[in-house]
Length: 426
Ligand SMILES: [Zn+2]
Image (cartoon, rainbow, N blue to C red; front, side):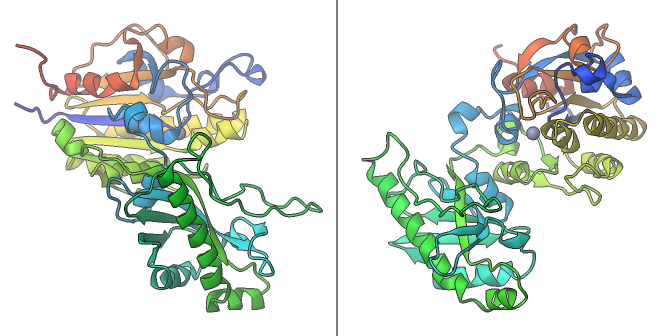
């Protein structure tokens, strides 16, 4: 009989790290003032989490997959499908999906990339999308689905027979440096090792034709004529990258018998959740930036838990400080997570809720990117027997009773505490 205790996973994105010399050898978490994180640690059970496998630096997408109990080594075939789902495109198993940018190429040759983000275009992309939808419905029998997202971002889905994801990117990822000649966009080609793969060759051919057709459709478009008249770079091409193939993922509700929702600031994770059939709830004050409103996120979590069994929430800010290699910024972001937890302690009944406080990966100041270091993690609330750890942090949590565990263990641990796990054996 399933219990109605609730499960909350709260992640400070990229929150874990390594000792920082400027902080007298403390980590960012150890240096931050975190009374609420310390309180749940004192009354919780601690350990160290490796989301994918020990020492593997996780992407935000693969980590969230792993934490939700979906093996990324088996089920992750590129980020494209999550991107496409996140912007609202329909995805079927076998589709090949890309994230794209509206970009500016030199109208004289249609190839030289002058601005990868088309001046961060923020209006008129719906009309550009409409033109692409109307004028490029298919290429060589492959159906083209295309949709715009915020600013210059957009997504492309190829649907048809004989295609796969083993192809290269079109986006050169380089904007021209001052005084340097601009790069041309890349032709899509089969990946090394797939040169003779007829599906990869065909996919590359379709992508290249799509990109050329986009230039023909967009360069002459009224929106771009207007932009040029206003001295703005025209959004006269789209450059695909981040390819992936859609696979079937068992819906979260079927897999666990739990009604799940996600409160996150990362589009990619939002797309993953939609892919898993989870509800996506946006906190009104969440900006995805360092100025995000953590109380708004916490309030949204509290109200979402009222009508869901499971919530995963993610606060993006700590990751930004890690990527910027800025200890003070990251300390401020960790303290935002602390204030969110303080709000949850005041407004949630942890007699009937179990929470995991962790990160999706570490983003150490000294690395400036995701690392494979284990993540300090606390379980708190319903069902949890506290250990002796007194404060939240890398060194402290390593002393905890949960030891070192993997992302694949997380849902088992949580459903055991909540009482919704199933017995293995008689
Ligand atoms: Zn992340």
